[in-house]
Length: 225
Image 1 (cartoon, rainbow, N blue to C red):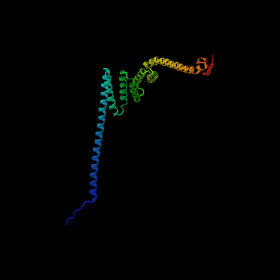
Image 2: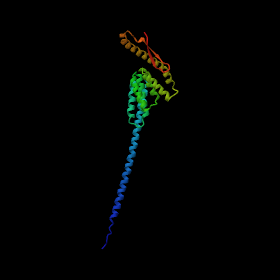
Image 3: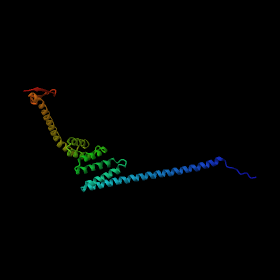
Image 4: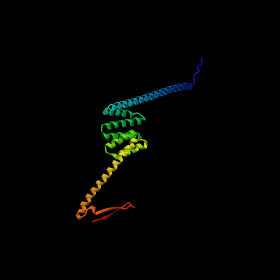
């Protein structure tokens, strides 16, 4: 009688474990390969998006150069839409907003110019071109104090910027003159109001004289007939 030796149960278990282990390793390898392909595809998509942004911006520049400002605005807007999905795109987005700003400036849409410059400066607070364009729009809107403020910011970034210095020197006397005029108009209105009340008593504001104390800077009022 021939005895057939049987393999122990643990021999089958070891063989099964080895097969499972190989299967898991193969799956992990496939997963790693898929992850690599996904990462590669994602980077390729980002590169394609960056190219599309640059192409749209370049076309916008070309249209701007030929005086087609409305068409240029559309291209810069397209570049912004694509760039919004691209990481670390703050610089190109700020440039596109600044380019849209100068298009609106050329079209005489100064409020829109200011809005675009604001968005450019949110992305890049020291963007000199955006500050210059916003200052120019503010001046067109007769917001002279805001224009001066922008020019002063430019000097903080570029102390040697002659354009900013010349603009400040030109605008500050105008602002001072406007303030003086507003003060005179306000005083005139106050006099009218005062005379309307004092006239009932046979007096006017001319009967009162304000004298400034050189030591304290305060005023004293004296009555004159």
